[in-house]
Amino acid sequence: MKKQTQEPEGLPVIQVKHASKRFRKQQVLKDISVSFVQGEICGIVGHNGSGKTVLFKCICGLLYLDEGSIYIHGRQMHEDIDMLNDAGVIIEEPSILGNTSGYKNLDYLYRIRNTKNKEHLYAVMEKVGLDPKSRKKVHNYSMGMRQRLAIAQAIMEDQDILILDEPMNGLDKIGVADMRKLFLELREQGKTIILASHNKEDIDVLCDHVYEMEMGVLSKIR
Image (cartoon, rainbow, N blue to C red):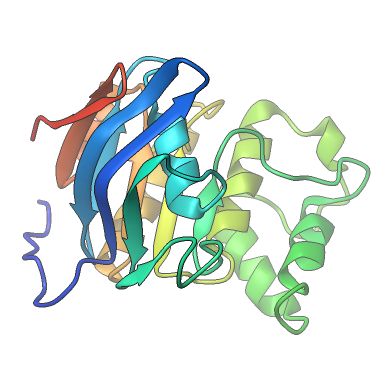
């Protein structure tokens, strides 16, 4: 049974207000307003090219809006903060070092902002179903293993916000079941999770609220 959450008092974790974005003559986001609160999983569905990934990139600060604004914990993107650094993110292809192991990939990225913590990274890899002691190079990973590594990268710093664009890509049935269980556990820990998925079952099982993106317009459908 899903946890019933209520919107906390004060500002939501993420607020998007009247967001619009164009690439030349094509408008890919059209006056989008939406809020995401703590302890919920919100799903966004839509065809390729509908604007989901562009919205995620704008929330992360990777793209500038043409109109509107985005607030993270009440701080305005590109005014008060330059980028969304305190979040776990999967957007398009994750950054990987193909000629080394999965553990060494995580260790290199983790130590950019943290001290070495082998035990923690071992636990994270085991949580996503990877063997942290394996010397197998990432360029020899299957697509599903690479996706598990991307999810490990997104959760390894225990961020309160997770933005996941098609996080189930390449996973088999067991992998999908494992990641669904993990995401529900993270929600119970109070994480704010926004995910895009083509899989209706993922959306039905995981999401407290569901939005549809079509031709740059975002509509709430549940």
